[in-house]
Amino acid sequence: MNAMQGQLTTSQVSPQAKTKMLRILSFLDKFGDELDHTFELVEPNPYFRMMLHLVRGHLEAKIITPTSLVGQSRVPYATATRRMNEMVEAGLIERRPRTQSGKSFSLHPSDKLMEQWMQLSGRVERLARTSFGGADRPGGDEDYFYGGSYMATSAIPPMQVLSEPIKLPGGLRVLVHGDPTFMVMDTLKRQFEQAIGAQIHQRAFSIDRLREEARRNAERKTSRYDIIAVDLPWIGDFAESGVLMPLDEAMDIARLDPADFHTAGWKAAHWGGRPYGAPAQTTPEVLFYRKDLFAEAGLAAPATTDALLKAAQRFHEPLRGRYGIGWNAARGTALGHTVLMTMADFGQPVLDLPEIAGGFETDHLARRDYRPTIDTEGGLRAAEFLLQLLEFSPPDILSMSWYERVRPYAAGKIAMAYGYTLLAPFFELDETSPAAGNTGYLPHPAGPGGRALAPVGGYVMGIPANLPEDRVRAAVEALVLFTSPEAQKMYVQNGSRTNPRYSVGADPEVRRISPIFEAVDAMSWRDELQFWPRPPVPEITDIIQICGEEFHDMLRGIVTPREAIRKAQARAEAIVRAPGPT
Image (cartoon, rainbow, N blue to C red; front, side, top):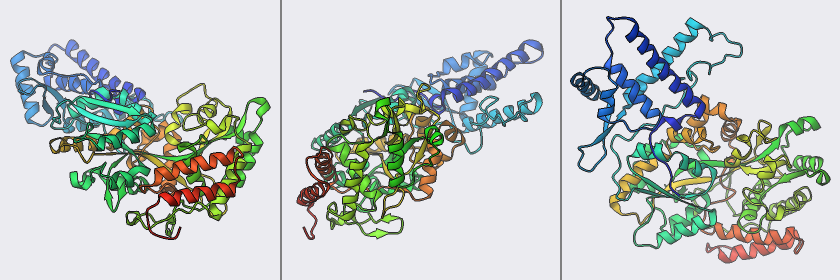
């Protein structure tokens, strides 16, 4: 699948915000026309006209050439050319070569020009409110005029083109997961291609096929991809087996602004103290619940597993086609993830990790001195809890996985569902969904011995270890751009519900798009976002598969909970190569 093309600000803002921003351009353009046509002594302002054309092209992802820019100036060709060159010298216009010879180039508004444009727009908005009303509107209608809220000083500015286009023969090649966030990138193809100055070729796979392709790529003499998306639990495996290059070997990590990433998401990208990727999406698994149904039933949002079971029983009405809860219960990978997260709900990590304040320590996993801890009291409680959940689940629960659990929730057939935040668009963007506008977001309710937490999932973008040296620098530039606050805001405004950065979650326009961002930020500040439930050790994929098989047999009634945890423990111990008792 191809992905990402074109210019910038169009998709950096939502369609609504984009319309508002273009409206102010249209207003200034028409106001200039009125001045030009009303007063005989008024002369056209070529700087102003060319600025409008540049910014409009920037917003609409259109190529601006010197010829087209001069044509918009409304002054003679020679005069317009001089004024254009003056704008270049003043740092208002950036030139980008369109051919290898450098004789043909496109023009783009510089950061300086865009900053001045944002300031002008804000002043125009304030003047309009003051002079023509709107400032005292009931409810403080901040969005009333020309996207004033977007122009707020705390808003993340539009994404800018790279000062120099990256040079990659054949274009940038990216391998990603076929989830909603990465699919948003496909709709932004024009914006990203123009931003980096190169074509982008993106391939998307399901989670299991993505892992296979990444490992197969590592066996090639040279990588077919410049950037690959990596599921967080794979970090240890991909680092140990040489699939990924340590990022600090390829770039200055400070360029990523690590402090801006959610702590759990950034730490999960590390192995042996070194980062192997930049968070592209941080998507905790949370509990979606129907606030309207809970209010009608007089129930509080469930904070414990006991309260969750009671609520699931209350809403479980199979004869009416409504069920209590949906979750990942399909055999293998899907259920395996559920098992590890449910064990965490009861305070039990799948490995014998040292306990620390707020969770469990994962900084020294590269020492490989761990062993599985499935056959434990916490493991047994988790198994018994899943059996209880089964009673209040849809009849096809044992084949439900990532998307199947959320679709019936969006359709109003399920009152609650465990799901990653990236799946929220299935109901948030569907105006016909009963869950739209009626969904609350909670961390996993805690069981005895546990505490509320939201297990962190998502993907980092990393650089293949076998990428030819002459492509590494360009890959780094693209990776920095794709994971930047500007790009992350763009994903959100085009339908994504994942976000790895604090700054994006705090952006006023982002917070208005969905309550999910404020909820996740609150979980992060409460230290509820945790990645230890799925520790990124090399064996974790096999352990997840084992749990997904043994617990599936339990849910089907083939084995008891004790037998399931005992068999899973024995199989997991057989694959863990670390020393220790078995």
